[in-house]
Image (cartoon, rainbow, N blue to C red; front, side):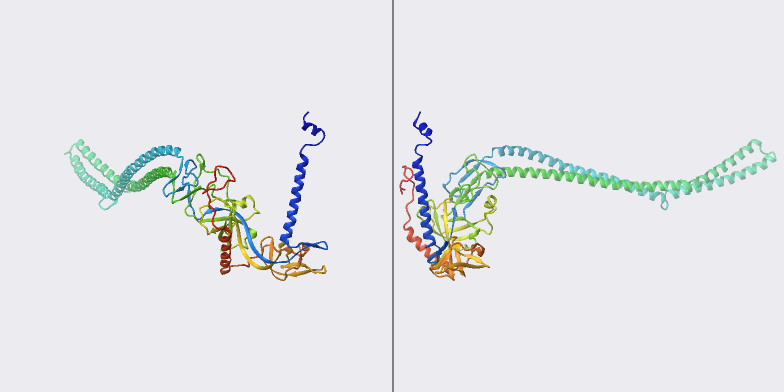
Length: 554
C-alpha cells in the first residue's frame, strides 16, 4: 500500500493543509485591500449610531469616461471582392506588408468560371444564328404578307368593278334588257308578217290557187313566230323579275366577300409580321443576354485579381475590425471562401490612427464631439497618447444589440494626434475621455445623492446625530464620485445609504461642462502633462531570441 493510499485510509489527503493556509492568506489580503480602497475613495467613512456615513471632500476632481476599444487606420483604402459569386482565395499578400499602387493583393480561384465562359461562347454563337434566322424570316414574312394583301385588294377591286359593270349606266343589265326588248320587237314584227302572209295564203287557198299543204306550212310559220314572241316576252319578264335581282345580289355579295377577305388578309399579314418581329426581338434579346453574360464572366475573371488602389500597409479585414466587432469569419488565408462585396483588405495609407471604442448609453449624455481623451495601448505599456473625440454614431451598434438587446453601445471614434509607426490597426486600447476637470471642488460618492421630487438631495448627519434632508446642486459624475456645485460644505458627513423611500438615485446627469475655449484649455493642459509623463519615446524593436521578458533591441 502506498503512502497516498494510507493517507486516504486515514481520511485525509497529503498537502491539502498548506493550500488551505495559502487560500486563507489570500482572502485576508483581499479584505485588507478592500478596506484600504474604501478608506481612500470614501475619505473617512465612519459609522455613527449604526449609520454608514462619509465626509464631503474638497480637492481636484476629473470627470472621465473610461471605455475600451481598438485602434484602426484613419480613412483606409478598402479592397473588396467584386465577383458576383463565392470564390476561394488562391493567394493573398501577407498581412503587414507595405505595397505600392498596382501591386497584386489577392487572386481568387476562377477555374469553374473559365469553363462557364467556354460554354457561354457556344451559347452566344447559337443565339447569334437564331437571331439571324429570325431576321431573315421577318423579311420573308413581310414579303408574303404584302403579296397576300395585294392579291386580296385586287379581288376586291374586281368585285366592285363587276358590280358597277352590271348595274351602272350602259352596264350589263341594260344591255340584256335592251336585247330582250329587241327580241320581243322582232318577234312581234315576225308575227305580224307571218299573220299577213297566212291571211293571203288563206284567200288563195279558198280560190283554189294554193294547195292545202302550202297553207298549213304558212300556218305553221305563223304559230312558230307567235311562240318566239311568247318566249321573248317571258325572257324579258325573267330578266326583270329574277335574273336582275339574283345577279345584283350575287355581285354585291362578291364585293362584300372580297372586302372581308381583304381585311382578313391584312389582319393575318399584321399577325404574321408581329409574330415574326416578336420572334426576332426575343432572339435578339437572347443574343444580347448571352453576350452580356459572357462579358460578365470575362469581367469576373479579370476581377479575380485584386490590385492595390493606393500605397499603404496591408491589414486583413478579419483582423482589422477592432475589438467588439469581430465576427465568426475564418481568418483570410489561401483556401478561404469569400463572397461578393466582402471586405478583404484595408490599406493603411497614412500614419494617422484613430481609437474606436464602444460608448455605453449611460455615458452618452456626458460625451460629445470635441472632448479631449487620453488613450493607452496594451501593446505599448507606459505610453499615453492625446486624442480628440471626432465622431459618435447616432445609433447603437446593431451587432451588439443582436447579441444582447439590452446592451446599447455607440461606436465612438477618437482621432489621435500622434503619428507613431508603432500604432497599428487592431491593437487593443483604453480611452479615458475627459469630460470635466476641476482643480478645487466638493465631491461625494454618487450613491449618497438621490432625487426627491425631481431634485438632487443628500442626507446630512449633524454633530448631534440628527439627519437633515438637504437639496444640492450637482454637476457630472464619473460613475463613482459626483460633483457638488452648491449646498454642501467640506467635511460635512452624508449618509452612504439614503432611505429607500426618499427617491431615486441621481444617475445620468446631463452634460453641463466644457465646450469651445474651455475644452481647448483643458486639452492643452492634458497634452503638457502627457508630454512630461511620456518623456522621449522608447525604442521599439523585435525581441531577442531569448523569449518573453527579454529587452527590446533597436
